[in-house]
Length: 268
Image (tube, rainbow, N blue to C red; front, side, top):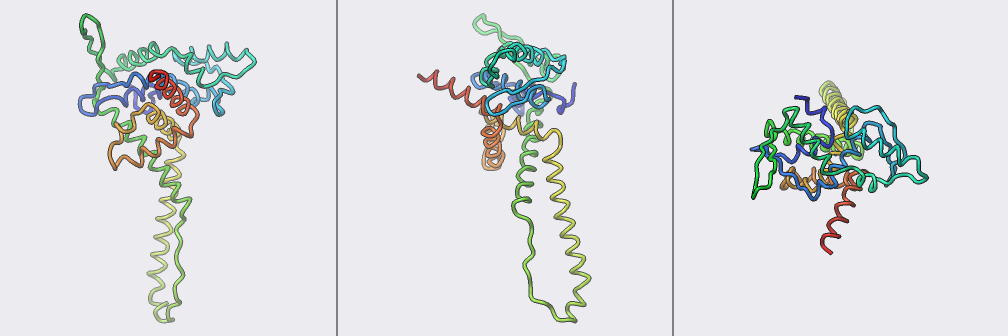
């Protein structure tokens, strides 16, 4: 079984649908109709295969990917690239076959032993029930993403509110002499502690997988998984951060637009 941090964004997005106790996948198909194609594009962006500016794909690099899904998307981009206008993210998502892509991802995870499949039938119609192995694998991914967003928030607070020391009245000469060693020690300790905290937060924000976690958080919000994964008051900071990323990052924002348009057309 491949480690969690080697899984693609589309695979991790599907694994986040696993129930924490039984591990059964509960995939919101209406949202994932667009979330899966969006996660494919986000993975290509992270890997440098495509560049994105606002609503458009501004460049692509056929990287000789051995991944069947990525290779198919890049081939279609290459065909479109011969035209005058740049391809928009919304149109690019529509050109990714949604159900076949999701099934291919599920089959891949099953072949790798991350999912088990139980083939059943209802009223004579066959269907498949997938279960994550181990059941808590989705919770592991969710916790990792939450940790990255918490590190981002901590880093922002350190940058926005540096620690300051209020001036105090000058002590007497004798008091100053007695207190000097203790004050120097505590000041050095405080400075070291503050520097260590700042450097830890910066390291967490700058680690290579942090951008992946941010993209995944934006997709989680776009797909409506945020309340399921981060419920209650304790999960509120993570939900807020995921919402911000869903509004800031181009691909999750495109997924939100597509889902909103689909919901509006269904309601009308």
